[in-house]
Image 1 (cartoon, helix red, strand yellow):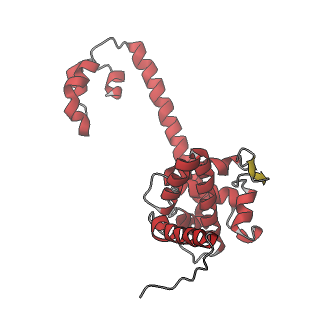
Image 2 (image 1 turned 90 degrees about the vertical axis):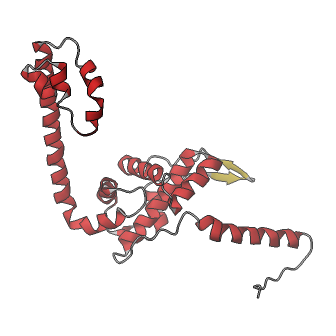
Image 3 (image 1 turned 180 degrees about the horizontal axis):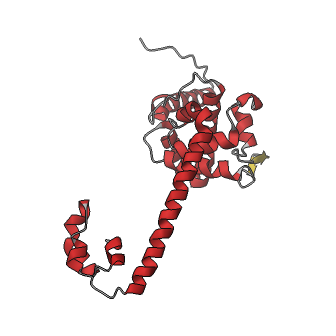
Length: 237
């Protein structure tokens, strides 16, 4: 339709009939939209805009092709990272670009999280927490994609999604992003440290089926011990 406008077509009915797919249900609205003043100068400006869009689209395609070439040797690792909830191909590429695939530099996942500054620096003194929970200044590119991945994971029906929602309800979205971002880094470390490892989601019901019962059991034992009882647990037959 824009190409027809540039070529000189001004009939609203003719322009509206060029609609495709779902736009075909809005022919009347399109006809109304094409009623107005569209001069030869407007066509000139629109042609320049479309030319610029085409040039940028071509540049993006060329850059994407270059990225695919560069990530080629690490394609299998990127594919495994892509399986993490919230982590898409582009995010996997950035993680590999910024972290690498050699985890021997990071003896444990905690070392990787510390290097990436994805661990809040909160100190406690006399039972009181001090500090804002800020992670400090780390790799800005890595922090951005981890934050985006954490938010995306929070919308999924997975363990990471439930973890994000639970923390966000209690402590806010910013702390949830840091916590889930750190969890994603931990998963990344394990996947890159052992090429045979594959991601396996433990499910959004993990807290209800495993963590909560254990926590309730410990709480009940502590309460009984505080009342002076010695508690011995035995499985029900």
